[in-house]
Length: 236
Ligand code: UDP
Image 1 (spheres, protein in one colour):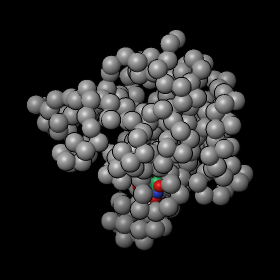
Image 2 (cartoon, helix red, strand yellow):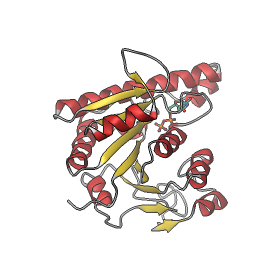
Image 3 (cartoon, protein in one colour):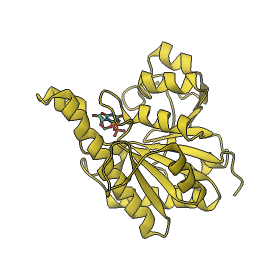
Image 4 (cartoon, helix red, strand yellow):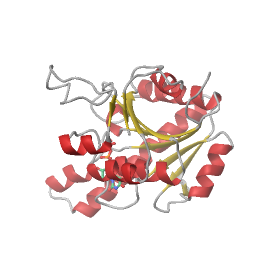
């Protein structure tokens, strides 16, 4: 396999982990993700992953129900730890070593994240899974993945979603929406496109980290992106 990226940060949303279930973790979806990730590690790509927690808990919805926002966000961050453990377990089950790093100290669940330990793990052929997002409330895992992607000097942040790229409007609501092949960070902000939160988009812009948005739920797409096929949308 010829690869166009050597080191990637892959962002997976918690929501897509639910599969068709509506809540929690769909073992089939998890296994599909694990197989796709193993395939690109075997092709020599160094892989870091940030996974969301929206399939279990989101701080904002907690706050809407009367939870303290900071505690709600901490609950959300713990949800990302649950998803990260599930993904690492699915990877190990198919013979792909993985290490879970936590932004908040919680040994023995995972090692506390440092850039150097993460890079070391990836260079050893392990998948580095970064849990707890940024480790701070009021942020999202999109911003967590922008941050980790920049820190680990990834070539690109791959945002695996359930739509096949960035559209002029939400394609699940507006049938006339069209997809961009490429779009600049500024245009995303100007058009108010809800592909990622603004903090994450601006961090990527300021640090020159390209973003590639693609449909991760189609098995084989991760490999296609890595091989340089023009699917999805590239943000530059
Ligand atoms: N969260 C946080 N700080 C971070 C990352 C996440 O407080 O740096 C919390 C926040 O409450 C968020 C929840 O964790 O709602 C789950 O993350 P996110 O909503 O980004 O998950 P996704 O939408 O990707 O499933």
